[in-house]
Amino acid sequence: MLRSAMGTVINIDGRLLPPEEATISVLDRGFLYGDSIYEVIRTYGGRPFELDAHLDRLEGSAGLIALTLPWDKKRFSEEIQETIRASANIEAGRETYVRLVVTRGSGEIGLDPALAVKPRTVIISRPLVMPSKECYESGVEVAVVSVQRVAPEAINPAAKTGNYLNNLLALKEARDRGAYEAVMLDGKGRLTEGSTSNVFIVKDGKLVTPPTDAGILEGVTRRVILLAAQDVDIAASQLHLEPDDLREADEAFITSSIREILPVTRVDGEPVGEGRVGSVTKKLQAAFRERTGVPVDGEGF
Ligand code: PLP
Image (cartoon, rainbow, N blue to C red; front, side, top):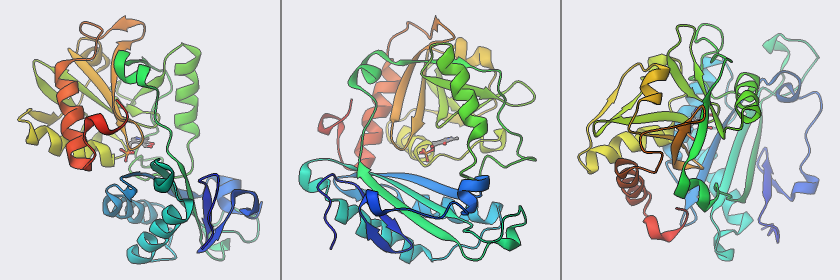
């Protein structure tokens, strides 16, 4: 088995390679058109968290862009676990970041998906890097940006595709304004999600997040948090929200597989609630970690 001193191993179509040997064709449609889908997964205690949910979503994304997956869920799962093992991060006391990408492959240059000969799978396994401790202790700032989330009728945000220009431009606007993450609105001015995160607010002790029909990616973390809220008796609902709901919230946070629950303490330069990480957020962070099997004092915040 290939062992990487650097903790990074790449699997291309079932072959494990060191990063310097992991190359694919410039004719790949993922490169030419963003014609691909992907998942980002992390490990807890060396085991991929919610792997089944990620693979279900991968299948959903494939369906939404009419991409035929090369492997079944069992094979994806085995290849991912093999790649994680080969990167040997857990032996070095680290958790692993996994990026699974399936492209429509390559063929004659041209938009028509029928030109693609065979899908290509890439699994990148490398040491996990979380946001800094400071981010979790002080919270981050988000900016409600002018770049709208692409409409479900254009490219359905429920599909996690490799075409991230919409999100990238939203994030650029947020970063240009000094914020850590963007919050995008839909065409009606309602909150959708962050560039790579889902958004939650807390008002009067209750948790609220936009529903899936708000035109968002249904985050795996989002789903686990809604369950974790039940564990600790926090009422949670999925409702359409406006930017003012975020500005007037008592607490807010963003979520993703890598960040878990990252507190938001400022919106467009103004404090959220008291401008500090709130008690409901802390309670949910602990409840979420319980579900990962690696409690709060293990790592991270
Ligand atoms: N929304 C978008 C657009 C994302 O890209 C991501 C993750 O990258 C999320 C939400 C959060 O999803 P998950 O919790 O499955 O990581």
